[in-house]
Length: 142
Image 1 (cartoon, rainbow, N blue to C red):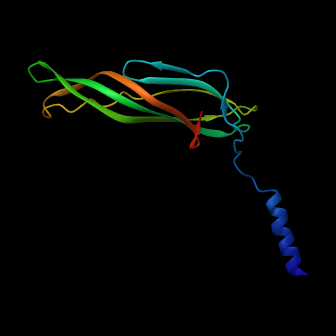
Image 2: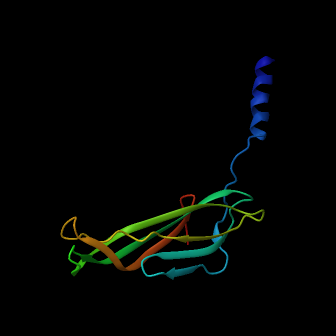
C-alpha cells in the first residue's frame, strides 16, 4: 500500500511541475528591417509564437567582409587587409502576454584587417554583410 501511495505522489507532483514556456511556432510578424549602417548591421523585427511572458534570447549572426586602412605613426595611410569573419550579437527579451516580442539588435564594428606592425593603426572603412540569420533560443527563424 505504501508503494502505491508513493507512486501516486510522484505522478501527482508531475502535474504541478513548473517549466519555462516553450515556443510552438516562432515566426516574424510583418517584415523585419535590416539596415546596413556602414560598419554595423541593424536587424529589427517582431516575433510571435514565443509563449506568454517568456524570456527569450534573440541572436543575430552575419558574415562580415571588412575593408580597412592602416595609418603609420607618421600619418601615412596605406590600404589594409580585407578579411571575412562571422559577427554575432544577441539580446534577452521578455515576450508579452500574447507571446510576441519586438526586438532590435546591432552588431559591433568588426576588427580591422592586419596592418604591417603594431605601431600602425587599423581602421575599418566599410563592411559588406551577407548570410544573415536570426535565431531564438538556438532555433533559426526563417
